[in-house]
Length: 415
Ligand code: FAD
Ligand code: PYC
Image: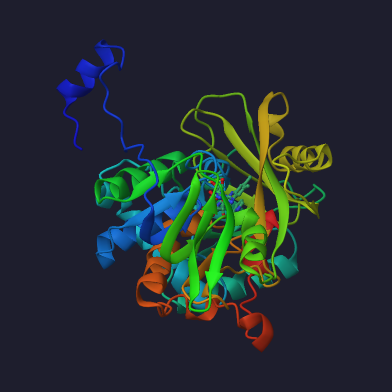
């Protein structure tokens, strides 16, 4: 639906009372062609592309809470495609390109801001590793460059480039096309567009069981009754192992809390994204003025959406080493999401041992940037019952066959 300035003004003056809902609130039907479990960005994008590109309209997205309430609404919104391995570079670049047109594709402003993402080097080894990475990334046709400390200072005047600190800044890699986008808007944009194509988005509907017969998957048990489905796609991030157990197999995935926090809002001061693996912190500034700050996962397995204070203390120390100017800022709030990490830090987008049951998981700490690309190739995998060329390498068999796609380095500070 398009809004004119007059209708926006009219709605504002009427206290939003007649503001139309952006998507329907349907009752679950008895049966669907495809049921998607998980109403995060990836699940909603999958449903959208199933309807938009494969003409499959009898699709439901089942979400146990509210759409975007999982990691989609909890992440720090960094988007980039600077991955080392060819297979990952192609997949993440596919996603970045979809992001570059997503506001127009969905007619919904996702507030994409390609403000550049810097990864800092603090010793000679870091520098060599970054330059090897930059060469590999450029061989895949993706923009990436090395900056000297003077170039970093010109781009980020508030960063401390003194040679006397514990971890001096010796250089950085920069992906200029990297940046941030509004996470909620990505979920809402896909939800509204999928709904307009007939997809049923059903919130407060938890999947509690997966029914399978001799021919494969038959449907799902939910808190709102049994729903029959010809095909089921599971996209539940940190809860992927729980759903796999319902279907009778195991996944090589560990669930951890990953936390982040924001400061009080301040005037615009930091117009790029800076990440440091060595001191272990990353920071950007949101459109509201808050500094968005994160670090690594909490080391233990957990399903609790909260993290420990040790991580916060270390990340604050790291922040102040890089940006002493932030020393008097107050921190407003912190939160965590449950991330699903594979042994090679790459995702699984795959058929499973159960016919017509598909899993999309293992994005760990870095799947927001992949949201449109992941949905696009997962929809293809489900619709055609075979992988898209871009996700063929990300199958479940690689953990028994050994063809791992090691991206621990690209996952960077968050690991
Ligand atoms: P989710 O958004 O978590 O959606 C899964 C949904 O499944 C949830 O809404 C959940 O309620 C639902 N669900 C679970 N079980 C069931 C069930 N039984 N029945 C029905 N529904 C169910 N990535 C980046 O690229 N850049 C970043 O800067 C970044 N920062 C991050 C910072 C933090 C603090 C966190 C936690 C993550 C970050 N990530 C980042 C990772 C990113 O958030 C995720 O990889 C991505 O959002 C996963 O999207 P999703 O749709 O798969 O999962
Ligand atoms: O994948 O860029 C990323 C990221 C940054 C913080 C968490 N994930």
